Length: 460
Image (tube, rainbow, N blue to C red; front, side):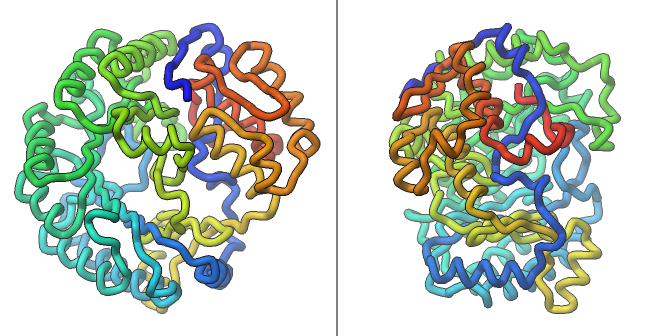
């Protein structure tokens, strides 16, 4: 496929509206409290009939300090004692979940996210993974993809060695920006030495993949300052990179109110930073996967994209489309059978459910036939920048041009702007449309036609 990115500033400005990131379709905005634990159990039964591998996501919400830009579900505390009651509940939730799933199903993917997963002690890490292995059938190290998010300020060489010992083989590090002025403005002081020490430890312990996360659009960032951070990142040669757009939404996220609006780069500067970042990374040999993601050409993501096997879920791009995802911990989202479900949001509600031996399901949605058809179309476009219409018609038993007659009228503007090519057999997103893939996917989103986009961040 065409891996290049074409940057048309005028088009990007015109199309830069708010919209979903499509880690699911329907998006979490459509989840309904009427979806209960009983309906979740019904979906697990359907999932067991279908069989196949599993994926586990554990949400560990605690952070020692707050990063002002953060919009994640987190709990800020310096009291490490808060972790054990939560972990006890997490163990109990695993017990309840494991009872529902066929024990022969193999867990091929596992992820600890947060918050700061390494907020917990080394012994608690060992116990959590040991309990996981008691309840679930984890793949071996060669076949399993077991990843963890790391804040380099909360990990050292010993931590990394323990994580490898208990089974993790992939690591993702939050960097955001190396510039001290930017770090101070967002309350995340993190030295280059701390970050490099974790990367070195991960390589010493034979982690299979190292990924770094950056954010553009933070206060005081300039094109040149962010280019310096990128040069340092490229020098350490990570396997993957995520370059996220900072979405400043202080009306929704209280901690963002600590950021001075006047210090945030203008929309024009943000676009210049993005363009410079794409140029630097592609010149350094990275492949633009889509959205915010870059990978080396020999990375599993890049290979999966070339082979039309890439998928997208709540952790972003993935190579495990066949896995049902079990979400564990507060606010976690799972994808089981023909449903999405989300756990309760607060520690108290979560603990109360588990004290009553009940799954902590808060809300969810069962997908109807239309949802599944549109999810397939959106996923193919956002992962591969193309759609084989004839294959879709055979797979989904539809007449594509009749089913999406209204949507294809809306697509005409993208065709006129030379972002998309439509033929009787294919939709192809041109390089100028790669950065605007969310907009293109929004054409096929039935729910967006019924609401404003106030729930979502800008696409660029």
